[in-house]
Length: 368
Image (tube, rainbow, N blue to C red; front, side, top):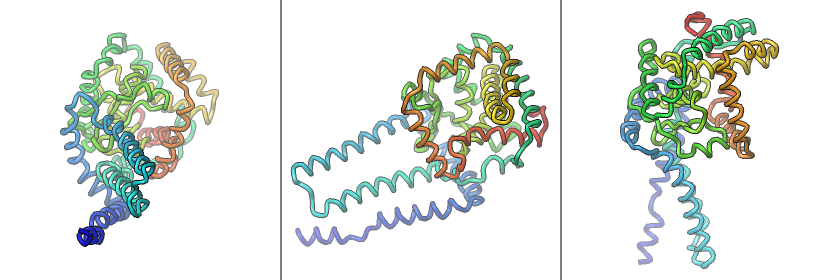
């Protein structure tokens, strides 16, 4: 019996070797951006993502959210189990090494699964390369020109939207159908951004998200997109189209914002178009305010009454849900983004305006 145990302990650690080789391989591959774009983001990832959405998209609940609940519970159970053994003085020989092995094995598994199932998209060339956009510094006068057309489009859509449009957003079935229509319309002009096998779910953590600052997210392990259904209704189409952009492999937050914009503005639904022009209007406002606060104030003063009303409602919503958790979550997410090739961190969302300016320079105002 002792001899068999010794043989088991002396067994060659194939699992560890394979795991470490995979991690090294992922890190090596991730620095070769053209290869990631060609072989992963446009090769392995699309069918893999469609498979995950096919497997889990039909479920009436979010499997990804269930996993997020299970993960900390598993960690707590593991810690309690070791603490109990410690208190009972039943720790095995070399227990410290065993703990490190278990924790390390778990961490390696999560790392490999994350980057294989979605995370390698952080190392792709991205939308600006696919769409051949020349993103560089722009003058304030250019920004004002684009803001004028966005403001005009927002005003036009605000005049079309009625309460029936807003009420329709309360139905998740409508939301899914309209998001698909938006991407179907976009794919007619940009086939590279086509999308199928819908998997858009209501987040189980919506009310928690209001206090931590998130309105939507993608679960990289199940490829389910999640929408916080407790945020103001008019804002939800823009968020939903942003999260679908992540589903099709757009990792950059700025680029996901931009693809969300391209799809949402292509929608046959007025409330979808209103949602995205509202979103882009205030992204542009933030940039314009940094450059010329007087000009920014003028745009806001001349906005459609419904835009002002929605802006006031959204600000009230944010004020009612401020908490000490939000800046902590923001700091964590900022560090996460910086660690995954988004050097601007959480401010990268605002860089969508740079992409919009490049789009304007390439295709003109009519494309806005």
